[in-house]
Image (cartoon, rainbow, N blue to C red):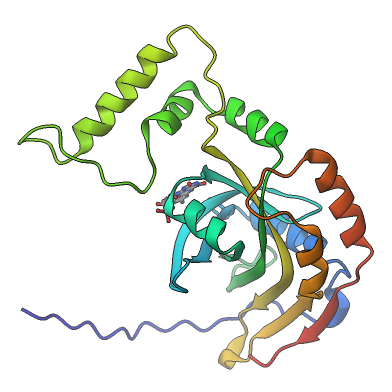
Length: 257
Ligand SMILES: Cc1cc2nc3c(=O)[nH]c(=O)nc-3n(C[C@H](O)[C@H](O)[C@H](O)COP(=O)(O)O)c2cc1C
């Protein structure tokens, strides 16, 4: 049977208008300000962000991750370096992040704020120190889970009654036994990435689809020259890159909705 669903749900967007005068000159500060507004207004998991990457054949891929910091360089997230996304980033160290937040207007409850933020950028590996610090802030079960999961690989069934879940559980048990009573160290295949943006677009949903869109850009070449490819970034390089990037001003354009 073929089922067809026609999707006719329709939303009228009426977010507060955004004008150029409302915007900060620095795109990352503007992102921080919208993120904090989403947090203040109770958006569930505002840090959830769609991450898009492109594989070595030029085919796109996309999934949700949790952003764990918005910092001077860009946005950080953590994952398994050998996962599909990790392999895609090794082959092509560029990516895009998309946040979508909706929440009632804080002043009057007669409508919703709808915001989208899109980032495009170079992706670099986080400094070891940051990955280690974040890994150790996670619960013991999550740390063991990182060892148990060869993220994105096929889980071969253990037996006839298994669909692969038992294989995963048995890998978790092995990890638990291996590290029993010991510190669980940061695996060499796991850690952070930072997406360093060359473009960030801020979108606010307005009536009649006449949305406000502002695009911040800075030349891609500035990032290309400075960022390492597929290597852990030394912490001092993060500071140096951030200091250099801060001197490059963002241009800001209003885009047609
Ligand atoms: C809300 C949410 C948050 C997630 N956070 C992460 C995360 O921070 N890191 C991660 O590796 N996967 C996270 N995932 C799982 C990913 O979406 C994805 O399934 C996994 O990373 C494997 O992706 P890949 O095969 O493309 O590498 C999250 C999923 C959801 C729905």
